[in-house]
Amino acid sequence: MRTLTDAINPYSWIMAARNKAFDTGVLESRKFNIPTICVGNISVGGTGKTPHIEYIVGLLNKVYRIAVLSRGYGRRSKGYIKAGKESTMEQIGDEPFQIKEKFHDIDVAVCEKRVEGIERLTHQNKSLQAILLDDAYQHRYVNAGLYILLIDSNRPLWRDCVLPFGRLRETPAGIRRADIVIFTKCKNITDEQKAAYRRYIKKKKNIPVYFSTVRYGTPYPLFKEDAATGAVIEKKSRILLVTGIAKPQPLKAEIERYGAEVELMQYGDHHNFSTAELDDIAKHFIKRGCSAIITTEKDATRIKHRIDLPRIVRENIYAMPIEVEFLDGEEKLFNKNIYDYVTENSRNS
Image (cartoon, rainbow, N blue to C red; front, side, top):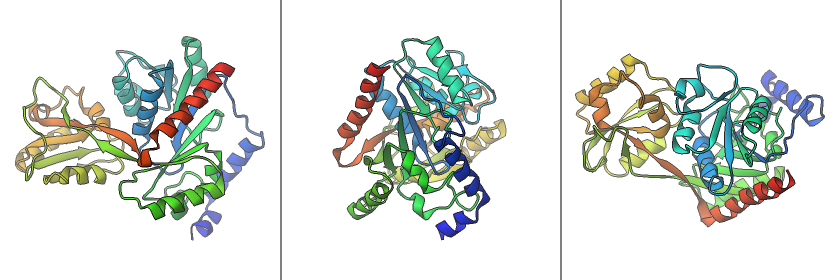
């Protein structure tokens, strides 16, 4: 069914023609001397891209001088902007803003034209040793040195269709551009499923295949000076979960695992909260007798600096941190793949 649907889908034809133009050199794809790692996906949203980028940043930042370049989805600005101390989420977008807040000492920039972004980053900081491209898998004007493709294990590409009939940006043939594939959100995956997924990828291209999940940390207050003390999630407590992400269900399940009752206020992905919505959150918190408000770190970047945040929200809101965890103890092998690529290509450059 997927093959038939894509065969009659004009968008699928356009993407196939575009990819062929880059493959044959009709459209130019620029390769840079500096090591460039692209982390992206073929499906629209919800593959866990940000925590994987943060994992790689944390890995490389220990040894190399690196930068992150993003389009800056959802920002209210255009062109090239390099993040600084005074940069706002509205200027650079929520995900770059979150990365910059976590990793103060790296360069973070946004630019719709990634070629221009790389040129300006490397000109401004001649000591850079690697650039991480955020969500640039379909941005083929840059020919990255290492492509990492993320696939949601709960929604494999071969069971989906290209937009607008499904959630794919291009057909699964795009797997052939990848150098590494990571199946994400693998909390309940079986060994049989992992074997089947590996076989599918290997038929497309013989590349490393990894499986990852996320590990939730301890919720921390957004405003330490205002927060109440004590455990945030307790058995039979009522938690107000506020999210503006594509798939909040895993986080909801994590909180419920502790025996808490969860009231979910779900907004669209990359949602910018209005004053009225922040007031609604405060009213719902009081009306439902909740003991705490929990949100994601990505949503926290949109809330933390709001001057119109109700006092009751400031005193009771917490962010839930997450970290990537590789299955089967393969994080060392994945780390080696990344280190080897950057080390080898840093020497060549």
